Amino acid sequence: MLMNLRNIIDRLRLPFQDEKELRTSLYEMMGFYPHDISHYKLALSHKSVGRRNEKGKPLNNERLEFLGDAMLDASVGYIVYRHFSGKREGFLTNTRSKLVSRDTLGKLAEEMGLTRLILSSGQSNSHNSYMAGNAFEALVGAIYLDQGYNAVMRFMEKRILTKMINIDKVAFKEVNFKSKLLEWSQRNRVKLEYKMVRQGKDKETGSPVFRYCVMLEGVDGEQGEGFSKKEAQQLASEATLKRLKREPQFIDAIFAAKSDRTKMEEEPSMAVPNISEGGQAEDFIIANSKENKPEERVKKEQPRRKNTAEAALEEIETDDFDLSDITANPQEKSREEIIAEAEAAAFSKTENNNE
Image 1: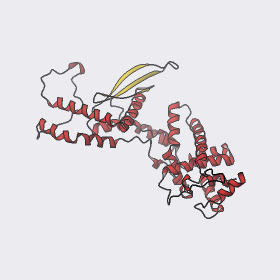
Image 2: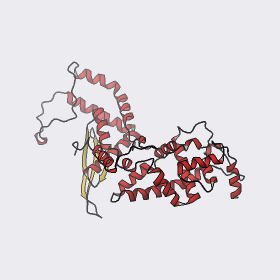
Image 3: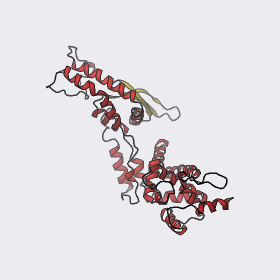
Image 4: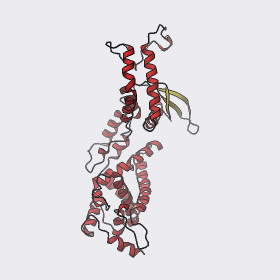
C-alpha cells in the first residue's frame, strides 16, 4: 500500500523539473536532504489539484498540515520557553501565537521560496498566504515523519528563528492596544475613560490584581484583568477594539452618546462648576468654530454621523506585528538594543495618559 502511494505521488507533475531539483530546493530551505522524498511531495500538493489514490482517498497535504501544526506548537513553545526564562505564561503564549500565526507562516513560506514549489490548480500561489501557511505546516509535518522531532527542532531553531525571524524583536514588539484605542478616540473625538471595576489579590500568589472597564462616551466597553493597571487596561483595550470591529451596533451606540453629549455642551448653562473635581477642563472638549451657530453645526453634523461611524470602524487595526520583521536578511542588532527600543516604544505614548 505504501509503495502504491509513493508511485502515485511520484507521478504528480510538480512545479520543478525533476526529483534532483526538488531535493536541492529542499536542502536550501531546510539545511538537510530528505530521506523519503514522498513525504515532501505530498506536503506540496494542495487539495485543489483533486488527486486521489486507487481507493478514492484524496492525496493532498491536509493531514500533514494537522501534524505540522502540532509540531510547530510544541517546538516553538519549547524554544520560546527556553529563550525567555522568567517570563509569565501570558507573554510566552502571546509570543508563540505570533510566531505560528497563519500570516507569519505564509510570509515565511514566501521568503523561503516554498510557494513556488506548491502544486495547485491555480497559476500562482505566491499571493495566497493561507495556502502558503498551510504548506509550511505540511512541510514541518513531513520533516517529522521523515526524520523525527529533533529534526523539526533544529529546523525551527537554526533555520527559522535564527536566520529568518528575530525572536526578540517579534516578542517585544507588542501592540499597544491602549495607544491604538486612544488614538482612534481622539481622531473621532470620542471621550475615552478607564474605570476601575475591582482591585484585589490573586488567591494563589497573593499578587495585586486589577480589573478595568473601557468607557467610550459613557458606554460600557470590554473589561480586562491583570497584575498591573497597565496590563488590565491593555487587555480591556484589546477586547474593546475587537468588539468595535465585529459589532457595528456598539459603535453606533457610542456615536449616538457622543451626539447627545455635544448637544448638551453647546447649550448655555448657568450651573456652578463642580469643585470636587478640581475644576479642571476636560481634555476631550472640541474647539468650536465661531463662524457657525450651534444649531447650524448640529444640522451639518447630523446627516454624516453614520458615515463617520463607518469610517471610524474601518480605522481600527489590531494586527499583532508588522510582517516586514520576517525576512531572510534580518537587521543585525543586539538583543539588548532590540528589547530597549521595543519596551521604550510600547508605552511611550500612553504612560502619562489615563493612569
